[in-house]
Length: 251
Ligand SMILES: Nc1nc2c(c(=O)[nH]1)N[C@H]1C(S)=C(S)[C@@H](COP(=O)(O)O)O[C@H]1N2
Ligand SMILES: [Mo]
Image (tube, rainbow, N blue to C red):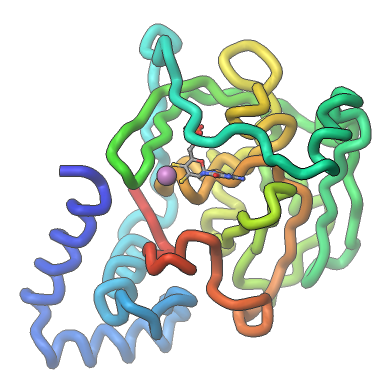
């Protein structure tokens, strides 16, 4: 079963087991404890809320599986090539020397980081699997700086609930809650398999969200926005939710 089918299957099971009364209770609890995903009013409705709430309650501190270097896939599959826009091509021609990451919104110190700022921050590497909702996956080593350190530097306000992240690939954006933004395996990835992060895999800068499906690991990141609500950010909470894929894609 691919991850999406399995997800629907599990959610279906929870809904069937919970029954209508169970759903009402789950809904009340989810609201009280802030466990409603921002797409809960959409297609997945109660099922998405149950999945998200259950995972958040049970696995808040859990880690995505890490692999040995010997398990790194020989031929990782990149499903996207470089963004076609002129702006990206100019950056690529310049070796990404002027690539910037803007951090804004509910932060004490809005900051623009250069690539050398980010490279000067603590380095972490981890070997994890990236899985696409379409059924394929690969294991790779990702090098970068833990996002939590960057968030510490800008002082994310306690009211912030979501981080929206934007790509230079103009159609792509997504968002995660603070649990995933601050998670120790969430990286601003700049390297892969002992080298610089190749463009097809999101170079120069990719957000690696290790506990969710591949589509949450957006490539060519330029901006992070912290917010307490997804309303007014500009439609659905991400590119894939726009196509009715679940916002929360925990694995
Ligand atoms: N900017 C951008 N990020 C993206 C995508 C994309 O098309 N553009 N595809 C997403 C999807 S659907 C998946 S499954 C993964 C695929 O990662 P890979 O190309 O390293 O295999 O990247 C995600 N990040
Ligand atoms: Mo994907």
